[in-house]
Length: 476
Image (cartoon, rainbow, N blue to C red; front, side, top):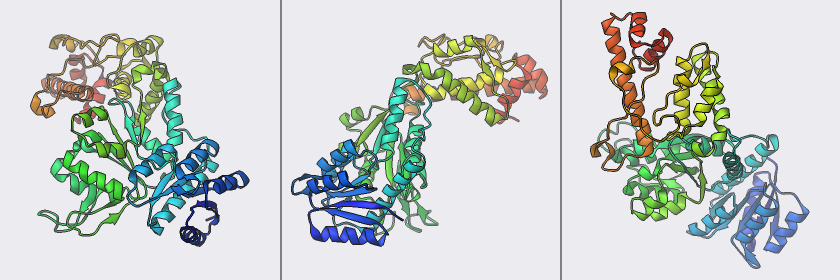
């Protein structure tokens, strides 16, 4: 390993310790005892990483971080903070620091940090033009991609906000893939899908025999993400009891398995997301304020599709290519009237909804060309936000595409006493339509003694469309 590191600390013993550790890693070092000396080194030489203490005789380490961020944006800088100074570390991350390490300095943690910084610089030199993978040419997406490129260099926790289906996990994966942890694991977890009584074991793992049913030791999600990124999707759904334990794990960078007495250090980057307004969850007391400040060091907002309709043609073509590749078929073309209809809609379900309706249209279209008549919206009629009136059953069977029906109202029991969110409505509508499809198809098949050609004729759809539905609903 080769590289040149700038070490900035006014304590000779600390400087010597850092220089010896880095020299053993095969790295060349320069040492400065003040902000002024550090600036002079930066002006005269080229460095791969900078390590700086926060308290310097002629200024703050934050001043040096801001100077490097402004004048040497590709140079990763990490700060050394006093024990327990998490708030100071967060300020440094917001100012542009790559990462931080606390005193007394753990040499293993220091070596891992420096290796990540050098990996980041190496990857940038090999391919500085890599994109984030977030498709779009609108101003909102160009701005988002620029933020992703910048934040991928950092180890700061990032909170990704946006509506359901807008692409929050895609943004999280881009932050991981473009950063120094790209070779490590990316572990996504839906916090709302884990039962509360199993949550601690899922996150932190457990020792064999720790409780009834623990037949073997289990590695938790934190350990699974060691060296990489842990993505906490729908983080607002975490119960308060788990929020306390998560906060400690993030602050201490260590976890303790259920049944164990000692803590295990973990090296992970935390990314989180939710479609809820997290600051309102804090105000209502459903989300801890201290945890909010730890995971929301930097916020990335993913725009809804209705705010970037100019991206719909590009997205539609990309999604059709993806869908056709999955089915091993030729991608259909979009007629101009179909594209115009797509651009008129408001997309409550965002990009996920666009993909779903394109998949239906691609299957049901004739002649490998999607026309406006092949596109049926679930939430609106010709771009309005109104919910359509359910057609009669005999009218529904006259269409090749499943007819859009209003989903049944959710009861308080299904939503845990809370109002149904926009994302809930999208998911429930999809499930409701699939249930109707399954019932009507089974009736037609039984009536025709499972003759698929006759069943398709009775339903008023093509044989190709019936085969697709049978495969999708696992009825074959």
